[in-house]
Amino acid sequence: MSHVNMTSDSDPYKPDEAESAKYFFGFAGNPRLVARTSSNRWTEPQQEVDYYSSYSIVQVPKRYAAITEGIIIDRWGKDVDLAIIEALKPCAWNYFFPVKIGLERGEYWVPSIPSWPTVLLIAVEPDSLQWVDGIAVALECRKILGNFGIAGIEVEICEGQHTHHAASAKIEAEFMANPRGNTWFEPFSGPLGYPVAYLEDREGQGTMGLHLRLGDESSPVYGLTCRHVVSHDRPRKDAYRVSGEHRQYHIQGGEYVLNEAIGDLEYARGVLQGRVDNYQSRQDRWDTWYVHDETMQHRRLSEKDMEEWEAQKKHIARFDKKLELLTEIKERKARVIGHLAFHPSSEMSLLQPGYLRDWALIELDPLQFKGGFENKMWMGCGPKKRVLHWIPPEGEFRTLRLDASTETSVAKRGMKTGLTSGAINGIEAVVRRPYTNGDTVNAWQLLIVPDPEYTHFSERGDSGACIFDVHGVVVGMVIGGSGNKPHGSDSQQLKEGNEYKLGEKERVEKRVQGISVTFAAPIQWVLDDIENFTGLKPRLCAEDGYL
Image (cartoon, rainbow, N blue to C red):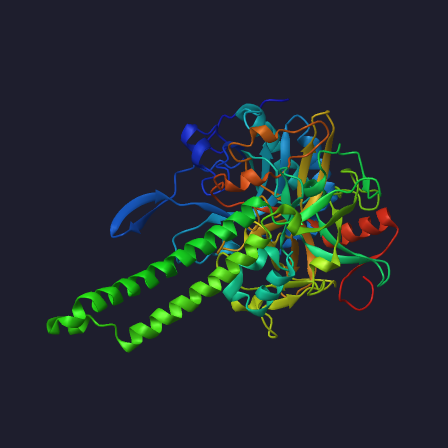
């Protein structure tokens, strides 16, 4: 690897420890800066914030913004990516993409995204690249961009990794009747975005993205998710087709999801019980002492108090019914929704160069979906309420469909992060996937940047979630995202020929703080590969006509 001598103030410089540690402050995983081509001296951006009337000086975090227009989109093609891949050969790189990067200033910050600079961001393995080699690579990449007529873009190399983001009929009826009043039931109901786990007690959980049929209307219904959610430690070169001898069953919601729902319900019930007990205590004191004391007549419960007391009792009865329904599916076998039917090998597609095959189909049991298999998405109660244009006029459930989309604004509902929205970057990310046997593949994937209301568009557990635009048109499927792997996942190391698996235990680990981006597979690539693998054309359930 050639070295570069820096001799003037106009040349890039080696960052000190503070810059290396803080330059990407605000990004998930707290990535370190390796090298950057800009010669502008970095100073820590700061702002004054008010914490309960006590003012503090803090660093201003960075965040991403999608490139949605401009000449760069027209000039950036696969030939640019391939030239950059060649330049990165000496590096243990994980992904790269061009994106806008700016500063997030304050709670009421309104981004001036058009003025944010566009940067080619390259992520390498931690501790794998020193500055002197990194700056040589970065300058070579900037030279490549210039050769393709893409000027004015700096190159920044950070340390970062790619991570995978891997029903009761009574409950479904209860949820559909009153979604907002029964949010605890959402993970165990029929609308898309529900969690998928193994029947056996093993790690691995993701999200159900779509309900499909293969061929004509007599076809079974299949649930679409990611291969790495259900691959069961199979070598990456192994495909799967269901056989009569052994079937791999899957359930709706792992133990953590169920226990979390029960715990939240019990907490809410406890709050109500405390109010009821308080009214009972006040009534007991009245009946025992105050009724005989003329100076204590004001302690008598008012008519309004009595009405509220009775209302709280009725609320508790409803909560008891909800807890009873969840307790009925406590056993894993009570949550079985079907068995694995197909998944391909985890290899590059022969139909679409650059597409890494990562899909799976679970044949669903119709007895577990009394409400049918419509592809509907509940648009209420995201972790942060998004603007109302995501709510369709006909109600809080949006019916998804397949069509051409020119929209850049998209949303998804996943097992981990619920309903989130973001924007599709105008240029795809290139993600390098190394395996322990020495093989590597370079995959082209959609890049989704979260909207300012969110720090993440997706996280671990959201793999398989479908991504759709404001009109309900499905555009992609969540595969993974940026950010270093969470602490405590050392036991989930790469196994021979396999990818990282999402463990249910990892859902209770600390969330990696900061902004992250999401990598996704274009839905048409996925559907074309399903047809090539099965020999049958997929189509959405409850949709007239074929895809």
